[in-house]
Image (cartoon, rainbow, N blue to C red):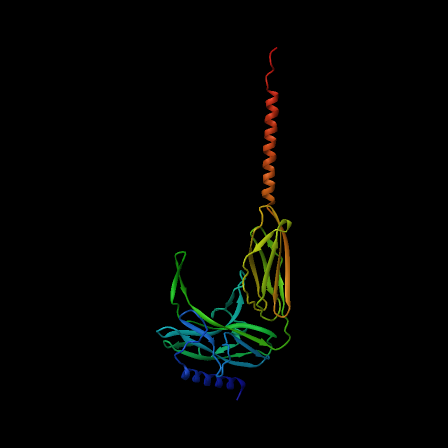
Length: 316
């Protein structure tokens, strides 16, 4: 029997077992939207902490088998669609996202096959859906990130956007992190920063082959060392190769000031990157005020000179 045939047989057997063992219970903690929840299927002998994400390992050329649990939290049957998807980070704020099924899947989304595509889960019940990840022989070492997505088969509602009706298809996913054996090279870079009185902007890039959840620290001070406070920074989960542009608010800078700001990004494994910038604020306002004062002084001097020149002489 070929490897593909063995994998298909195992997948079919697990799917049959899942259909027979679905029970009316919801997971204690799950990724959900109030209507359905999606988590890794707990093992027969679960540990003290439930799995929230999939963390898998494999050498190139092998197939990994696991299972995802879908729980219907409503009083009516749900018709859902199950698929694997590549992960990405948004360019604007680094948000973690998963590709739509109509978009090309080039990584783990293309390697993942689920036991079913279309799924009907009865009210207040759950089902365990097996899936395989067939790691290509030429897969690069490091982390390949995606998710098992469970979405509505048909949109459940509409939103008005500028007077146009937009179909909304809700989806819930369990993140999937697959580490392919080989050299692990974590890396981060921080692009050149630009700042004004109110905020600093910068870019963060995951330049290695591991997914990273970096900590961002922004420190700032003004003229004579007075305190400038940095606002909240986002919590990121960066997939390898992701680059995102970020902004952090600054509070406390004077109208005319010299603000020095440093951005430091760190992650597990001793990964660290930093950038710094110094910004002079209020220069144009200062020049405008000086020009206004000079103009006012010039007008005043001219008026005094003219008053002296036109003063009548007294008669003797």
